[in-house]
Image (cartoon, rainbow, N blue to C red; front, side):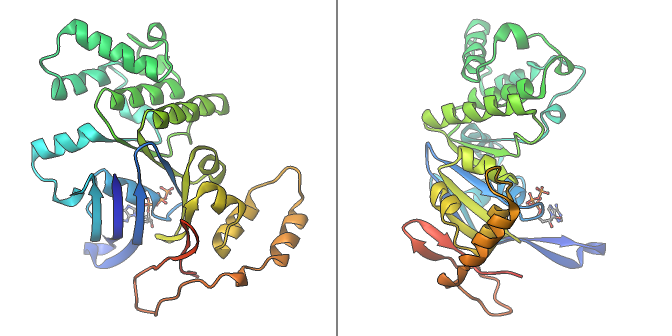
Length: 303
Ligand SMILES: Nc1ncnc2c1ncn2[C@@H]1O[C@H](COP(=O)(O)OP(=O)(O)OP(=O)(O)O)[C@@H](O)[C@H]1O
Protein backbone atom coordinates (compact mmCIF):
# COMPACT_ATOMS: atom_id res chain seq x y z
CA UNK A 1 0.00 0.00 0.00
CA UNK A 2 2.72 2.47 1.05
CA UNK A 3 6.18 1.97 -0.33
CA UNK A 4 9.22 4.15 0.20
CA UNK A 5 12.10 3.35 -2.08
CA UNK A 6 15.53 4.92 -1.79
CA UNK A 7 14.06 8.02 -0.19
CA UNK A 8 16.47 10.81 0.67
CA UNK A 9 15.79 14.20 2.22
CA UNK A 10 18.33 16.97 2.30
CA UNK A 11 17.34 20.28 3.90
CA UNK A 12 19.00 23.52 2.93
CA UNK A 13 20.07 25.22 6.14
CA UNK A 14 22.24 28.09 7.32
CA UNK A 15 22.44 31.63 6.06
CA UNK A 16 20.85 31.85 2.59
CA UNK A 17 20.36 28.05 2.60
CA UNK A 18 24.02 27.56 1.74
CA UNK A 19 24.55 24.43 3.82
CA UNK A 20 22.93 21.02 3.43
CA UNK A 21 21.61 18.78 6.16
CA UNK A 22 20.96 15.18 5.27
CA UNK A 23 17.87 14.26 7.33
CA UNK A 24 16.84 11.02 5.60
CA UNK A 25 19.21 8.65 3.87
CA UNK A 26 18.20 5.95 1.41
CA UNK A 27 15.13 4.72 3.30
CA UNK A 28 13.21 1.72 1.99
CA UNK A 29 10.13 0.53 3.81
CA UNK A 30 6.54 -0.54 3.29
CA UNK A 31 3.27 -0.42 5.21
CA UNK A 32 0.53 -2.86 4.28
CA UNK A 33 -3.20 -2.61 5.08
CA UNK A 34 -3.88 -3.73 8.65
CA UNK A 35 -0.23 -3.37 9.59
CA UNK A 36 1.32 -1.12 12.22
CA UNK A 37 4.89 -0.16 11.39
CA UNK A 38 6.83 1.75 14.04
CA UNK A 39 9.45 4.24 13.06
CA UNK A 40 11.66 4.44 16.11
CA UNK A 41 14.58 6.78 16.62
CA UNK A 42 16.19 9.38 18.80
CA UNK A 43 15.50 13.07 18.37
CA UNK A 44 16.82 14.22 15.00
CA UNK A 45 16.94 10.75 13.47
CA UNK A 46 14.57 11.80 10.69
CA UNK A 47 11.33 10.12 11.80
CA UNK A 48 9.08 13.15 11.50
CA UNK A 49 10.63 14.10 8.18
CA UNK A 50 9.62 10.69 6.82
CA UNK A 51 6.08 11.17 8.17
CA UNK A 52 5.89 14.63 6.60
CA UNK A 53 7.09 13.34 3.24
CA UNK A 54 4.44 10.62 3.30
CA UNK A 55 1.84 13.28 4.09
CA UNK A 56 3.12 15.48 1.27
CA UNK A 57 4.00 18.26 3.73
CA UNK A 58 7.57 18.35 2.50
CA UNK A 59 9.04 17.02 -0.73
CA UNK A 60 11.51 14.16 -1.19
CA UNK A 61 14.98 15.14 -2.40
CA UNK A 62 15.34 11.88 -4.30
CA UNK A 63 13.72 8.46 -4.33
CA UNK A 64 10.07 7.65 -4.49
CA UNK A 65 7.08 7.32 -2.19
CA UNK A 66 4.28 5.29 -3.68
CA UNK A 67 0.82 5.08 -2.18
CA UNK A 68 -1.38 2.47 -3.83
CA UNK A 69 1.03 2.59 -6.76
CA UNK A 70 0.91 6.37 -7.24
CA UNK A 71 3.92 8.60 -6.73
CA UNK A 72 3.02 10.95 -3.88
CA UNK A 73 5.35 13.71 -5.13
CA UNK A 74 3.46 13.83 -8.42
CA UNK A 75 0.12 14.50 -6.78
CA UNK A 76 -0.56 18.04 -7.91
CA UNK A 77 -3.58 20.25 -7.96
CA UNK A 78 -6.33 20.81 -5.42
CA UNK A 79 -8.61 17.91 -6.31
CA UNK A 80 -5.81 15.30 -6.55
CA UNK A 81 -4.48 16.39 -3.15
CA UNK A 82 -7.96 16.31 -1.69
CA UNK A 83 -8.38 12.73 -2.93
CA UNK A 84 -5.03 11.77 -1.42
CA UNK A 85 -6.02 13.16 1.97
CA UNK A 86 -9.26 11.23 1.78
CA UNK A 87 -7.06 8.11 2.01
CA UNK A 88 -4.06 9.28 4.05
CA UNK A 89 -4.22 11.39 7.18
CA UNK A 90 -1.82 12.44 9.92
CA UNK A 91 -2.26 12.95 13.65
CA UNK A 92 0.50 14.72 15.54
CA UNK A 93 2.03 15.04 18.97
CA UNK A 94 0.29 18.06 20.41
CA UNK A 95 -3.48 17.69 20.14
CA UNK A 96 -4.09 21.12 21.68
CA UNK A 97 -2.43 22.91 18.77
CA UNK A 98 -4.89 21.38 16.30
CA UNK A 99 -7.86 23.04 18.02
CA UNK A 100 -8.78 26.69 18.05
CA UNK A 101 -9.49 27.52 21.72
CA UNK A 102 -12.27 29.96 20.87
CA UNK A 103 -14.37 27.36 19.04
CA UNK A 104 -15.99 24.21 20.31
CA UNK A 105 -13.82 21.15 19.74
CA UNK A 106 -16.28 19.41 17.42
CA UNK A 107 -15.82 22.22 14.91
CA UNK A 108 -12.92 20.15 13.53
CA UNK A 109 -15.54 17.81 12.06
CA UNK A 110 -17.25 20.66 10.19
CA UNK A 111 -14.11 21.30 8.17
CA UNK A 112 -14.22 17.74 6.86
CA UNK A 113 -17.91 18.14 6.12
CA UNK A 114 -17.52 21.31 4.10
CA UNK A 115 -14.59 19.91 2.10
CA UNK A 116 -15.70 16.35 1.54
CA UNK A 117 -19.40 15.97 2.31
CA UNK A 118 -21.13 19.24 1.43
CA UNK A 119 -24.25 17.46 0.17
CA UNK A 120 -24.75 15.26 3.24
CA UNK A 121 -27.88 16.08 5.23
CA UNK A 122 -27.61 17.26 8.83
CA UNK A 123 -29.13 14.02 10.14
CA UNK A 124 -26.79 11.79 8.11
CA UNK A 125 -23.81 13.87 9.06
CA UNK A 126 -24.67 13.70 12.74
CA UNK A 127 -24.92 9.92 12.53
CA UNK A 128 -21.56 9.73 10.75
CA UNK A 129 -19.94 11.85 13.47
CA UNK A 130 -21.54 9.76 16.22
CA UNK A 131 -20.24 6.58 14.56
CA UNK A 132 -16.71 7.96 14.31
CA UNK A 133 -16.81 9.11 17.94
CA UNK A 134 -18.02 5.66 18.97
CA UNK A 135 -15.18 4.04 17.06
CA UNK A 136 -12.62 6.00 19.04
CA UNK A 137 -14.42 4.94 22.23
CA UNK A 138 -15.58 8.36 23.30
CA UNK A 139 -18.95 9.12 24.79
CA UNK A 140 -20.55 11.81 22.55
CA UNK A 141 -22.23 13.32 25.60
CA UNK A 142 -18.81 13.96 27.13
CA UNK A 143 -17.13 15.54 24.14
CA UNK A 144 -19.62 17.20 21.82
CA UNK A 145 -20.44 20.83 22.47
CA UNK A 146 -17.33 21.27 24.62
CA UNK A 147 -14.45 23.70 24.25
CA UNK A 148 -10.93 22.26 23.88
CA UNK A 149 -9.91 23.35 27.38
CA UNK A 150 -12.80 21.30 28.79
CA UNK A 151 -11.35 18.11 27.31
CA UNK A 152 -8.28 16.05 28.16
CA UNK A 153 -5.33 15.56 25.81
CA UNK A 154 -6.41 11.96 25.25
CA UNK A 155 -9.97 12.99 24.39
CA UNK A 156 -8.70 15.62 21.95
CA UNK A 157 -6.29 13.13 20.38
CA UNK A 158 -9.14 10.66 19.91
CA UNK A 159 -11.35 13.39 18.40
CA UNK A 160 -8.60 14.03 15.85
CA UNK A 161 -8.45 10.33 15.04
CA UNK A 162 -12.26 10.32 14.76
CA UNK A 163 -12.00 13.21 12.33
CA UNK A 164 -9.57 11.19 10.19
CA UNK A 165 -11.99 8.25 10.31
CA UNK A 166 -14.80 10.33 8.81
CA UNK A 167 -12.82 9.95 5.63
CA UNK A 168 -12.24 6.64 3.98
CA UNK A 169 -8.64 6.53 5.16
CA UNK A 170 -6.34 3.61 4.47
CA UNK A 171 -3.21 4.96 6.12
CA UNK A 172 -2.75 6.92 9.31
CA UNK A 173 0.55 8.62 10.08
CA UNK A 174 0.61 8.85 13.88
CA UNK A 175 3.53 11.08 14.85
CA UNK A 176 4.34 10.89 18.59
CA UNK A 177 0.63 10.87 19.36
CA UNK A 178 1.16 9.31 22.76
CA UNK A 179 4.00 11.51 24.00
CA UNK A 180 1.91 14.21 25.62
CA UNK A 181 -0.66 11.92 27.20
CA UNK A 182 -0.63 10.66 30.75
CA UNK A 183 -0.11 6.98 31.39
CA UNK A 184 -3.77 6.01 31.80
CA UNK A 185 -4.84 7.74 28.59
CA UNK A 186 -1.90 6.34 26.66
CA UNK A 187 -3.15 2.82 26.94
CA UNK A 188 -6.61 3.85 25.66
CA UNK A 189 -5.09 5.44 22.56
CA UNK A 190 -2.79 2.46 22.00
CA UNK A 191 -5.73 0.08 22.25
CA UNK A 192 -7.61 2.27 19.82
CA UNK A 193 -4.79 1.89 17.31
CA UNK A 194 -5.07 -1.88 17.71
CA UNK A 195 -8.82 -1.62 16.90
CA UNK A 196 -8.10 0.46 13.81
CA UNK A 197 -5.53 -2.03 12.63
CA UNK A 198 -8.16 -4.79 12.99
CA UNK A 199 -10.38 -2.74 10.69
CA UNK A 200 -7.66 -2.87 8.04
CA UNK A 201 -6.02 0.50 8.52
CA UNK A 202 -2.27 0.73 7.91
CA UNK A 203 -0.50 2.82 10.55
CA UNK A 204 2.92 4.42 10.43
CA UNK A 205 3.59 4.95 14.12
CA UNK A 206 6.38 7.46 14.71
CA UNK A 207 7.91 7.31 18.16
CA UNK A 208 11.10 7.89 20.09
CA UNK A 209 9.90 5.39 22.68
CA UNK A 210 11.14 1.86 22.12
CA UNK A 211 8.64 0.28 24.46
CA UNK A 212 5.71 1.90 22.63
CA UNK A 213 7.08 0.60 19.34
CA UNK A 214 7.32 -2.84 20.83
CA UNK A 215 3.79 -2.67 22.23
CA UNK A 216 1.90 -1.58 19.14
CA UNK A 217 3.69 -2.64 16.02
CA UNK A 218 3.89 -5.62 13.72
CA UNK A 219 7.13 -4.39 12.27
CA UNK A 220 9.71 -1.99 13.64
CA UNK A 221 12.14 0.25 11.86
CA UNK A 222 15.00 1.64 13.92
CA UNK A 223 16.39 4.81 12.43
CA UNK A 224 19.74 6.35 13.09
CA UNK A 225 20.97 9.58 11.53
CA UNK A 226 18.31 9.31 8.85
CA UNK A 227 19.19 5.77 7.78
CA UNK A 228 17.65 2.45 8.76
CA UNK A 229 19.84 0.68 11.29
CA UNK A 230 17.50 -2.27 11.65
CA UNK A 231 14.08 -3.28 10.40
CA UNK A 232 12.00 -6.39 10.77
CA UNK A 233 9.17 -8.11 12.56
CA UNK A 234 8.94 -6.40 15.95
CA UNK A 235 9.55 -9.58 17.87
CA UNK A 236 12.71 -10.35 15.87
CA UNK A 237 14.06 -6.82 16.27
CA UNK A 238 13.38 -6.67 20.00
CA UNK A 239 14.29 -10.22 20.95
CA UNK A 240 17.19 -10.65 18.60
CA UNK A 241 18.59 -7.23 17.72
CA UNK A 242 21.50 -7.58 15.29
CA UNK A 243 22.73 -4.04 14.76
CA UNK A 244 25.10 -2.66 17.42
CA UNK A 245 22.98 0.51 17.62
CA UNK A 246 19.75 -1.41 18.27
CA UNK A 247 21.52 -3.52 20.86
CA UNK A 248 22.76 -0.38 22.53
CA UNK A 249 19.30 1.25 22.45
CA UNK A 250 17.60 -1.82 23.85
CA UNK A 251 20.20 -2.11 26.57
CA UNK A 252 19.32 1.44 27.65
CA UNK A 253 15.71 0.51 28.40
CA UNK A 254 15.53 -0.14 32.12
CA UNK A 255 14.65 -3.77 32.80
CA UNK A 256 13.22 -4.03 36.24
CA UNK A 257 14.23 -7.64 36.73
CA UNK A 258 17.88 -7.05 35.78
CA UNK A 259 20.56 -4.63 36.88
CA UNK A 260 22.55 -2.40 34.51
CA UNK A 261 25.62 -4.50 35.22
CA UNK A 262 23.88 -7.69 34.19
CA UNK A 263 22.70 -6.11 30.93
CA UNK A 264 26.20 -4.75 30.19
CA UNK A 265 27.76 -8.13 30.88
CA UNK A 266 25.28 -9.85 28.62
CA UNK A 267 25.95 -7.42 25.76
CA UNK A 268 29.68 -7.86 26.17
CA UNK A 269 29.22 -11.62 26.06
CA UNK A 270 27.25 -11.34 22.81
CA UNK A 271 29.26 -8.99 20.65
CA UNK A 272 27.59 -8.17 17.36
CA UNK A 273 30.53 -9.47 15.33
CA UNK A 274 28.36 -12.39 14.33
CA UNK A 275 26.63 -10.04 11.89
CA UNK A 276 28.43 -8.55 8.94
CA UNK A 277 26.96 -5.11 8.41
CA UNK A 278 26.81 -3.68 4.91
CA UNK A 279 29.43 -1.03 4.21
CA UNK A 280 29.60 1.94 1.87
CA UNK A 281 32.38 4.26 0.76
CA UNK A 282 33.04 7.67 2.30
CA UNK A 283 31.19 9.68 -0.33
CA UNK A 284 28.45 7.15 -0.93
CA UNK A 285 25.10 8.31 0.46
CA UNK A 286 23.35 4.98 -0.03
CA UNK A 287 22.42 2.93 3.04
CA UNK A 288 22.07 -0.68 1.92
CA UNK A 289 20.39 -3.29 4.08
CA UNK A 290 21.42 -6.90 4.61
CA UNK A 291 18.75 -9.52 5.29
CA UNK A 292 19.90 -11.49 8.32
CA UNK A 293 16.82 -13.66 8.57
CA UNK A 294 13.51 -13.64 6.73
CA UNK A 295 12.20 -10.06 6.69
CA UNK A 296 14.81 -8.91 9.24
CA UNK A 297 17.35 -6.42 7.88
CA UNK A 298 20.35 -4.57 9.26
CA UNK A 299 21.87 -1.42 7.84
CA UNK A 300 25.24 0.27 7.78
CA UNK A 301 27.08 1.24 10.93
CA UNK A 302 27.28 5.03 11.17
CA UNK A 303 29.51 6.67 13.70
N1 LIG B 1 12.34 22.26 7.93
C1 LIG B 1 13.59 21.91 8.28
N2 LIG B 1 14.63 22.64 7.84
C2 LIG B 1 15.90 22.29 8.15
N3 LIG B 1 16.23 21.22 8.91
C3 LIG B 1 15.22 20.46 9.37
C4 LIG B 1 13.85 20.77 9.08
N4 LIG B 1 13.06 19.84 9.68
C5 LIG B 1 13.92 18.99 10.32
N5 LIG B 1 15.19 19.36 10.13
C6 LIG B 1 16.40 18.66 10.64
O1 LIG B 1 16.39 17.35 10.10
C7 LIG B 1 16.82 16.40 11.06
C8 LIG B 1 15.73 15.37 11.27
O2 LIG B 1 14.63 16.03 11.87
P1 LIG B 1 13.26 15.27 12.23
O3 LIG B 1 12.32 16.27 12.81
O4 LIG B 1 12.82 14.49 11.07
O5 LIG B 1 13.78 14.26 13.34
P2 LIG B 1 12.96 13.45 14.43
O6 LIG B 1 13.62 12.12 14.49
O7 LIG B 1 11.51 13.46 14.10
O8 LIG B 1 13.27 14.25 15.74
P3 LIG B 1 12.25 14.77 16.87
O9 LIG B 1 11.78 13.54 17.57
O10 LIG B 1 13.12 15.63 17.74
O11 LIG B 1 11.16 15.52 16.15
C9 LIG B 1 17.16 17.18 12.31
O12 LIG B 1 18.54 17.45 12.30
C10 LIG B 1 16.39 18.48 12.15
O13 LIG B 1 17.02 19.55 12.78
